[in-house]
Length: 91
View 1 (cartoon, rainbow, N blue to C red):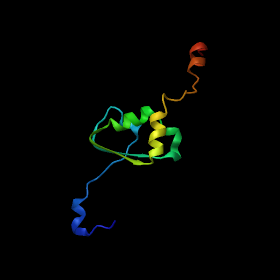
View 2 (spheres, rainbow, N blue to C red):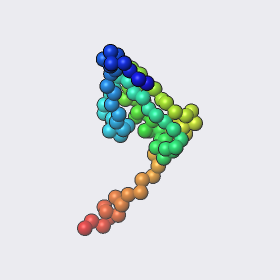
View 3 (cartoon, rainbow, N blue to C red):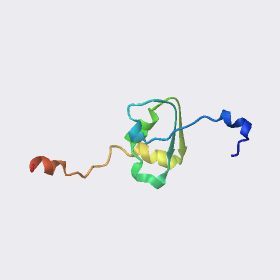
View 4 (tube, rainbow, N blue to C red):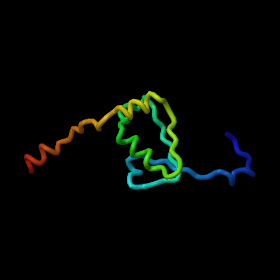
């Protein structure tokens, strides 16, 4: 969209952040893109965290299928770390 010079003062700055970085914060409005192309990010806990950041307005933009995948996703996937190994074999 093209805005004439006289209407530039009607624009409001917006900022983007990740759901991870937004934890512990609240915003007046939140827009969350949710698509199946990024299926590894479709976790219920991530969607919940993103949705609960909005105080007055939350908008999900994307595919219904992706929302369903996130909601049905259940618990987070197992994380493959070396924590157990490090605890059992300290250097």
